[in-house]
Amino acid sequence: MTCKRCHTVTTKLTNLCYLKTYELKALDCQLKATSAFFILG
Image 1: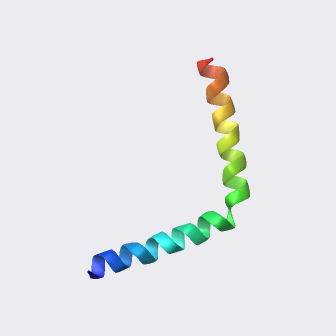
Image 2: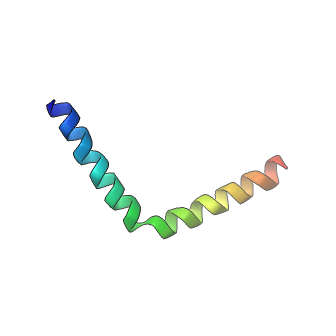
């Protein structure tokens, strides 16, 4: 039970961090996806 609660808190913190840096991560993800597309394509 404690482990599950801890995991929930960690997930919430991760979500907050993700929301905080969403734009940068989205941009980075786009760049990687584009690079992979050109490399594989």
